[in-house]
Every structure is written in C-alpha cells, then in structure tokens.
Image (cartoon, rainbow, N blue to C red; front, side, top):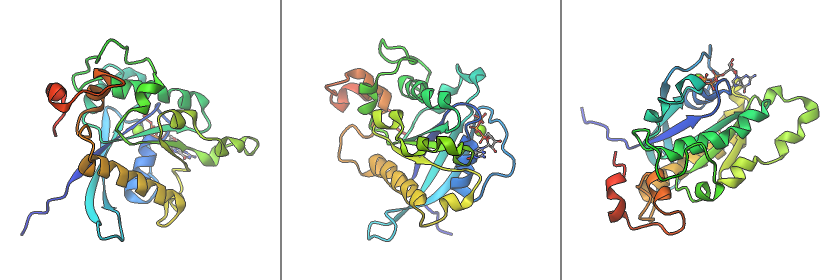
Length: 241
Ligand SMILES: Nc1nc2c(ncn2[C@@H]2O[C@H](COP(=O)(O)OP(=O)(O)OP(=O)(O)O)[C@@H](O)[C@H]2O)c(=O)[nH]1
Ligand SMILES: [Mg+2]
C-alpha cells in the first residue's frame, strides 16, 4: 500500500487552567463537545484533517496538530518544552473571567520568549509584555473566548467589544460555547473563521515568500525588534522540524 505523505502544522493552545482549552480542541477536532473534561497534565495532542483552500484549485490536505498545554500554575517551569516549534497559536480565555483575558499577555510572553530549552532569549524577562514585539510576530494568532453561554445577559455588550489583546497582536478573534457542536457546524461563520485561521497557519508555514517565515519567532523577534537580520546570521537558533 502506498504511504500517504501529508504535511502537518503544529498549533499551540494556551490559556489559564479551566478556561476550556481541551473542550475547544475536542470540539474543533471531533465536531462534538467533550464528554468529560478533566485537568490536562503536561500537554495533550489531538489531530484534525484540514482541507487547505477548500473548493479552489489550490486545495490540499494537511494535518493540524493541536498541542493543548495544561494551564496549571504548577507546571510553569516545565511547560516550555511543548512550545517549539509553533506554527500557529490559539490563546484561550473564559469570557466570564476577565482575569483570564488579561493573563493572555503573560501567555504570549511565555510562549514567545523562550527557546526550546526554556532559556530566556535576549535580556527581556519572559513575563514582560511588549505589544510592539508581539505585533511583529510571524506566527498567526487566534484569540478564542469560551463559555459564551454563561455570559450574564446584562453583560452581553462584552461580546461586541473586541479583545484588546487580539487587537494588540493583530489576531483574529472568535467567541463560542464549547459545549455546543452547532457553534462550529460546517458553513457557520465561526467554522469559516477557524478554517481561514488554519489556512493562514499553513500558508505561513509552507508558502510564505518572507525569508523569515521558517525562523522560530523567538529567534527572529529577540535578535532585533525593528531590523530583522538575514537568516544566515541566526541559523544556529533557527528551528528546523
Ligand atoms: N458552559 C460551558 N462550559 C465550558 C465551556 N468550555 C469549557 N467548559 C467547561 O469548563 C471546564 C474546564 O474545561 P477544560 O476544557 O478542561 O479547561 P482547560 O482549559 O483545558 O483546563 P486545564 O486542562 O486545567 O488547563 C469543564 O468543566 C468544561 O466542561 C463552554 O464554552 N461553556
Ligand atoms: Mg485541559
């Protein structure tokens, strides 16, 4: 039987413990709500087959590999081992918990400031947030707000406001209820938005004309924030997978 050769992209899913990362990944990969969510210890991996540019002559099948990293504060020191390589990043917050949204900045800093050994890159602390740096990230980012069903009707205006974090890092944004499969049913606006995000991740990973597209974000960003150096000068820190 002929071997099937399908390229994959690695999408990191982070956010505070309990915001619904595992519930979201399960819904995206299996089109149904998770039966029993429990704390993720370390990281869990799930895979989805995605049709890049579906319905066009460029259509091609890819694997999306989701790395759902447990958000427990107990693992802050060790979870960096899951952060590289990263081709796409989903930042998850709970719409009923404002702190979980504010903490997305910490998650961004944590993911983008460490190399695969957990070492800090550059002089900046990994917990510092600098929008200018993140705006230059070449990694597509999606901000997802969960538990939309639990929003107090008096606070529904929350849903029409865009997330400051999403704005700062140029990310797309989706709010949903992870316990409802109809929220991501084929053809719905949210399903289309997810699909566009996945296309963007694949495009950056495999088709970007930008010579820096295959360089790990951390290497690129922390070498020089305004004037990226040519790839040959950072090849030692380049991540090849
Ligand atoms: N009502 C409602 N409950 C949700 C939603 N998303 C997640 N939950 C619930 O929130 C709880 C936590 O969800 P998880 O998916 O385990 O959260 P997590 O972010 O993976 O948490 P860690 O693995 O600890 O990092 C579970 O009881 C889920 O059923 C949602 O959109 N609506
Ligand atoms: Mg989990």
